Figure (cartoon, helix red, strand yellow):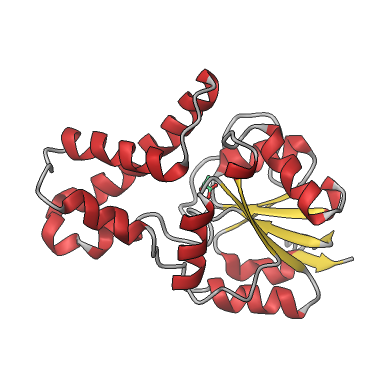
Length: 232
Ligand code: LAC
């Protein structure tokens, strides 16, 4: 029986990361209150993330941008009402926890290895500059990134092509020289359609999205990344 060859690494000059769901665990805020939330913890985390993303897309379609902190709070308000969790102080505590989301366990080590190999590292995220600065700082990743790029510089959310264009402009390299890493398949497809090389971090092992573009490589955690991207 033929063994499949290991996928060849993608040559790139920079690795650009999505933030939420890629470097930082979006379920971590609710998980910190698991004892208090009980059985509602996982449904709240999942619905909060779904609504948050829906609201970004719905606002983009309407041309009515509000920043990611506002949208994240509005999504949380919906979820607390939907799950009958409207309790004093809970919203504020969850929002504060969102500012210091835990990174996935391998994040720091893998960023170190990529930087040591000579790759430039950046973040391109829906998050506001303040949210991203807080999350990067809380995770101790402050020195790792050459650029932390927020959609607030563009005024529209992913997957608008103008967002991916912003990374090209900020880094001063061609789209095809950027390896884009995201845990969100829809983000990967849009980045690929724009012209980035793409690596989908499919932690849950779920099916791929049916959208324009495609992941060039798929992995189960960031641990696989140093074998899948090489500096040009
Ligand atoms: C971000 C969202 C998509 O960080 O996770 O941009």
